[in-house]
Image 1 (cartoon, rainbow, N blue to C red):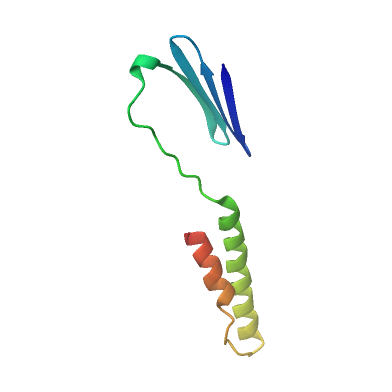
Image 2: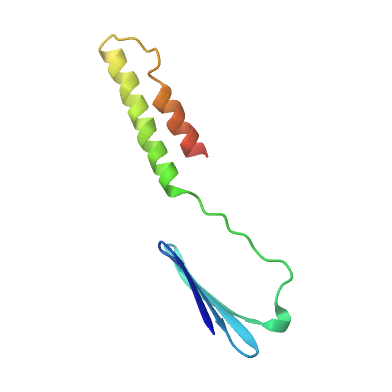
Length: 96
């Protein structure tokens, strides 16, 4: 029996056989596979946390927008009141 999980560019394949199973993965950074005997199956599973790339990218965009607003206000001798909002929000998204 074979199970396939896909999310964006990440693909996990689980192939179950009589004595072992095969785990294969394919993602942006590379691919690989491993065979595990059922008797040797580890008691503890592993956890992988994915970063939200969309939030990071929009954070960078907001940081650039905030820097542009502050720079334009300084250039045009305008008020700096409230001009750092997008800079702060963007930095928070990048740090998250």
